Image 1 (cartoon, rainbow, N blue to C red):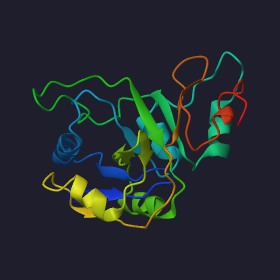
Image 2 (cartoon, rainbow, N blue to C red; image 1 turned 60 degrees about the vertical axis):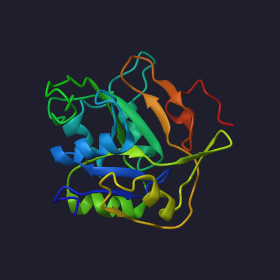
Image 3 (tube, rainbow, N blue to C red; image 1 turned 180 degrees about the horizontal axis):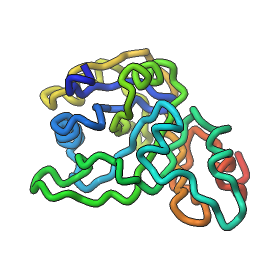
Image 4 (cartoon, rainbow, N blue to C red; image 1 turned 135 degrees about the horizontal axis):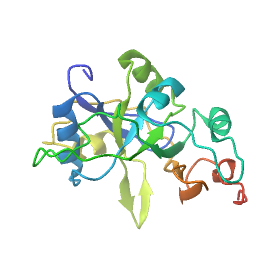
Amino acid sequence: MLQEGAMGIIPTDSFPALVCDVEANKAVERLYQAKGMEPSKPLSILCKNFSDIQTYTLGFPSTSTGQDTFRIARRALPGPYTLILCASKKMPKQCLDYLTGHSRARRTVGVRMPGDPICQEVLQRLDRPLLSTSVHVEKEGELEFAEGAVMMDMFAGCGLDFVVDCGMRVSEGSTIIDLTSKVPSLVRDGKGDASVFVPELVPA
């Protein structure tokens, strides 16, 4: 279904993700519309391995502190991290303003390599990354995991083609680390241990 341009929801090792084939122009447009997002809002890509990351980004940079971010990433991934990296020219052009048709140069991209076995199996079979955005509900000011039926209702009439419902899981987002500068920085503290990438942070 994804190869044919479908948009669906699959599990990850954090929140479920609304996904589509990163190469499917119409599906990318529907994904943005389904979430009511501005066309310029950057999304993440789900990758099956480091080869995909190397293709769609400029790789893991050296830091002023002498950290080998690639070696750290190899220890941490697959896992509940979103790593912000500089995008390569291979990053598909559908990361553009589809309302006017003018391309937007995308200099950075959030990269995920989830450890969830179902997500990994989907990525292996599709054999290229998925464009993704998290799916969750807010209850009493806190983000929570949405049940399968709730997710169907959330996107009713928005072109959602399928939901892979694996029952209730964790209710915590991924840890976001910005690796685009000489000093890695924490953007959002989540399920992954941020101190793995940002040494000055002491794990709770």
